[in-house]
Structures are given as structure tokens and as C-alpha cells.
Image 1 (cartoon, rainbow, N blue to C red):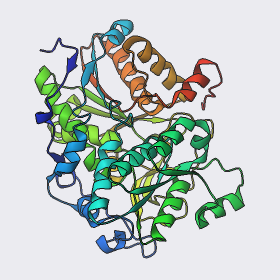
Image 2 (image 1 turned 45 degrees about the vertical axis):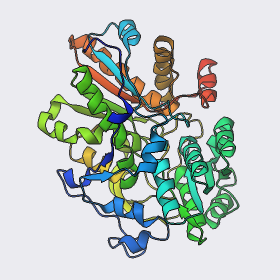
Image 3 (image 1 turned 90 degrees about the vertical axis):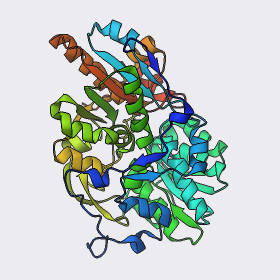
Image 4 (image 1 turned 60 degrees about the vertical axis):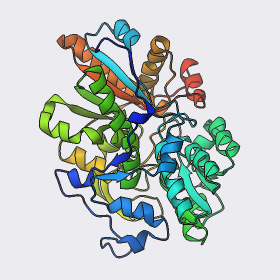
Length: 436
């Protein structure tokens, strides 16, 4: 069956439990620390921000966590997502490798983000929460949570990084169409935002700043909880539906992956993609490679340091041990490709620190060059974030060409660019600035 070009699953084959990597880690995880005491935090410390259902998942040592029926019912609107072979791209590259991609752009929001947005909205609704505050960088997370909150009749407030708010009006309109309100960050609505604007009235914003605003918003209201679209354990847990489906699809096609590739900002799509393959990675060693791809404008894994750092600019969140560029880092306004967070998931950081994960960074010109080549051969126009994975997959395929190696390369096409075409406009018309 390895000569087929599309592998699908029946809805009856959809995962019914999330894969929890915590009890399977080959190294001890580092605990989050209280921002004031610098001591390990407990569930009560997180209760003002998150519902207990999600807090329990954050620290759970159960190897599998059942997916509630209402979440499965919503997932079934677009899941399982297809695994497709990029045969036209292979031919254009002249590579002996097989290139496969798991396409998450078929969700209503156009990306992988609803996998956790739906779950987070569900657990908040179960505990009577009526309003959720969050941040968004390029807009994929904000639009996904707005979609999820609409399904569960929860009010949604989104603080959107100002540079993205200005560059991506259609993402903002998606958020508003699903009923959420969106504010460019830094804003005058919070103490954190006002402090940034006082220091720099022209601040383009950053995810760290937007997180500070959303956390302050949630902590100041009884009816509101906070929601994060990446980094935390429970978020990556929800995304493992991707990797679990992929395992079944590879088995169905009689394939064994040699390299798994995904873009990486905070780590949710990467973690969801590779976590279910960790035990295979440990068994096969270098025979199975995990590759994280990040932008040269925000090279957390490739140029950051691993240390305890705040998840937000104002220092209100717990300290996480992660690869970080520093919580005051602000990516350049010229950066068009998403993946803007200053740190990475502690779980992803641990895999990188202990040698289970490789990382590579690309300037955005090289990324969009690959995205256009993919679009002109395979048809799909990748989200700017996802285009980073396309770039790495092409480079891996070219390496295989040089080495005459018939490897199986699988990458996560984590979203489409239907609402992110302004960056393509800049690239195609020579206005996209290069970082390096």
C-alpha cells in the first residue's frame, strides 16, 4: 500500500484518549515555580487562571486521558485529518525520498489550534466559566478559541499582538465573526499594557505582552478564566490527536517515518505531532529524527538559553524552565511568519536539552520561497507558520537526493493561509524584508 498518495481514517478510528507524555519521559520534568516565592506551584496557585479539569491534566501521570464525548463529537466535524503524499513536489525536487504531510488546515479555523481550543472551552464550560481571556500572535489561536467559545456559548476576549492586528485584518475579522472581541496589544485596557505604552508608545507588541494583558484581565474578574494556546502540558496533550492519527495512518500505508518535522513557536503542534512517537524514537535512536523548525526572527531553540523564565513580559505567570530568549524579547515588526513566542514548552525544551529533538531556524525569505514551491506543486497554500516545516522538509528531501537515500519524510502542514495572504503579497511583490 506504500504507493498510495492519500491515507484516510474512518471516524471510528479517531483517537478516544489523549497520549500523556509526562509518565513516559526518559528524564524528570522540571516543575513550574511561583513567580513570587520561586517555589514549585500547586493546583491552588493555578486555580485563579484555569479550571480544575485542565489543572489536573497539567500534572497528570496517567498515560492516557479519555477524551470526553462532547469533544469527540465536535472533533468529528473535521477529524481524522488526511495524510497525503507530496508526489508532485518530490518530482520537482528529483528526490528519492517520499514526502508526506498531515494536513490540519481542514478545521473550521484552518489550523491545528481547535484541537485544544475545543477542549479548553469544554472544561471551562463544565465548571461554569462564562468568559475567557486570551492572547494571540498571528491570529490562529485567537480565531480558534473564538470558534470554540461560540460553540459553548462563552464570552471570549482576545488581546492580539499589535503588529499582527495591523498586518492580518482578516484574522481579526474571523475572531469577531465568531463573536469574540479583539484588542490590539499593548492596549490601554490593562496596567501591563499601559506600562508598555508609557515606555514605548510605538511598541509593536509581543506575545509576552499580550499574555500579561490577558492574565491580568482574567485574574481581575470572577467570571473569567485564562486560556493559552501553546506551551503548557495540557495544551500539548490535546494536540496528540494528530500524532495518534498519524501512527495509524503510517501503519495503514505500510510506512515507517525516518524524520518527523513540524514548525515550533511555543510547541503545541510539534508536541502533538511527535509525542506519540517518543517510545519508537527511544527504541530506534537516530533511525527516527524529530526536527523542530523556527524563524530566524525568534530562534528560541537554536539561539536561546535553557533557564527558568516568565511566560509573560510583566512577570505575572509561573516561571517555566524552558529555552528562552528572555521574557522581554520583542520580535522585529518585519517578521511575517508567526511563531513569535520568546520561549518554548518545557516538555519540548526537555526533549531538545536531552538530545531527542533537533532544531533549525530559517529566515523568512527562504520560508516563503519553499511555501510558494509547495503551493505551485501540491496546491495548498501553507500558513506562514506551517511554511517553516515545508522549508525543512524540502531541505531534508534535497539531502536525500545528494545521499541517494530513499527516506520517508513526514511533516505537519499545521494550517492554511486563507486568511494570511498579506505575507505572500509582500513576498511575491518584493516587499518582504529578510532578517538575515
